[in-house]
Length: 455
Ligand code: TYD
Ligand code: MG
Image (cartoon, rainbow, N blue to C red; front, side, top):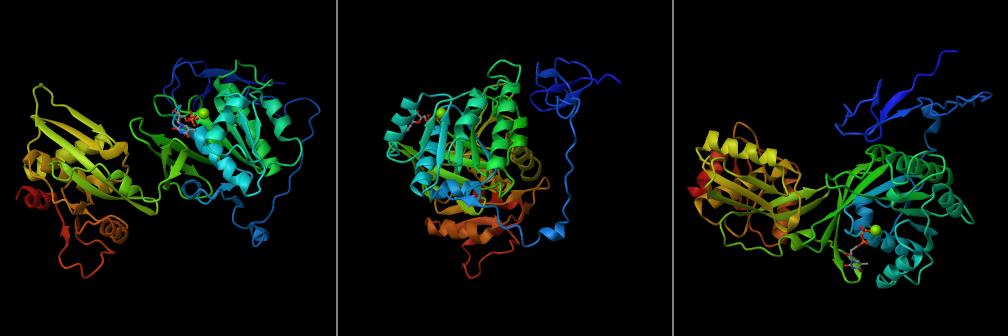
């Protein structure tokens, strides 16, 4: 029999190499490649009889399959981010910086679910049961029937959660503390995390429990350790926030059972996380409408409109190469807007430093913010404040044309609700509400915008 060839697999991204390399060609990480038996012991032992499965025709399944069964927490912002609650038999990864509030959020969710009669097991590998209880007391969750366990060994955890009545939801806080007897690697290594997560996912599939896994994020913004964990689970949510601010955003980046562009917004208080059902009010809270360089962007997060202020500072540079610094937006996108302003509008910025900031530490991912960014930049350069009651949205193309974006009506409705009476938006927007009496200013090119502001 031919000798089984071993493979060298990157523990971060899963890329297989034929020989050992110091730097993975797949993800560029160093020292992540480890020798593995390609069969991994699975089904390769002597005497293993393959089990025959039975394929089922798709049509035979119709009528049998309903919506994924969900467990609603009743915490609106959390249910919104998960797409309607945790799905039974699935695994969700909740990532975030240490100290951002993951354990707090999950303890509150556990308490809410327990009050609704669900059986919840909270497995803490980072804190002792007494510590978890202290937090629960602070969150007024101590009087609920949430079951606590302080374990880190995968086999022990499975024995614990598998005992007695089946749980509806299991929380593992966190995956970085998991270690298994079956994996021959030190605790905390990628192999251990992966083995542990695999075992938890298997448990969820077998018992129909929803599995919530907590993962810490590294400085680079990835779940510490393997990115493969993100591929293994059904949904990935990130809990984000700025240390200087109290609000937190739960952002969906992957979801097999729901939309991926939803966010849940919370505010951290001394009694835990509070839901924020109108985020725009929060983000516009510290507004200084009279200064040049500030433009309000009417954005969308999933199905919900969010208004946020974009701030720019354009100042003559004292350096050979002017500075460009961005917080809360894509820096490549800023370079593009600057280039279009130079090329098509005659706005010279080569001798200016440019700073761009999205208020409140919020992060914008929509290209629709282009117009608000351009407005803030021109306003700062010209030293002229924009009208305080105006919102901006629209995508800028390389030719300087302004392209329509989706959800025009919803953006404008939210703006009106918050007291904005004007808007600058792309010409030809499909769902533009009629009869606004000239308050919606349609423009079709960036030079139009510059003329409006600096005119
Ligand atoms: P925690 O949930 O422990 O963070 P993580 O699990 O993501 O590491 O939250 C830690 C921070 O939240 C800590 O700095 C204290 C703060 N906090 C409050 O402000 N109010 C509260 O009610 C609780 C429980 C924590
Ligand atoms: Mg924690």
